[in-house]
Length: 91
Image 1 (cartoon, helix red, strand yellow):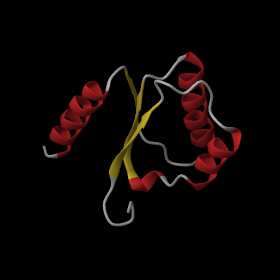
Image 2 (cartoon, rainbow, N blue to C red):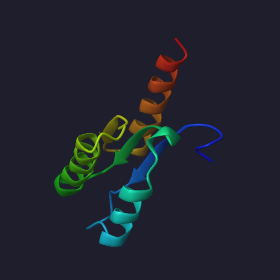
Image 3 (tube, rainbow, N blue to C red):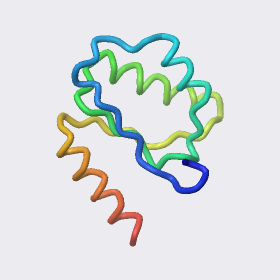
Image 4 (cartoon, rainbow, N blue to C red):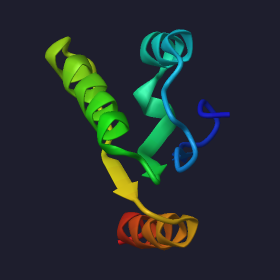
């Protein structure tokens, strides 16, 4: 899908208590930043924010491209953020 058109990656973490190590590693090594405009995390706790931020920092240290990350509390905030980001792209 990302090869045809870039999109926003939205992940609802509001009920997640942890991030599965295998899943995190899979995303870390198979994530292709050119597929995405950015990542939006809904309801991320402190540890989840730290993991997401550190993964992005690690990728930047490795010389890999990164995309903006946003943390919001609700789905409505995520939708509003996507609308705002899209309007900026149209300029």
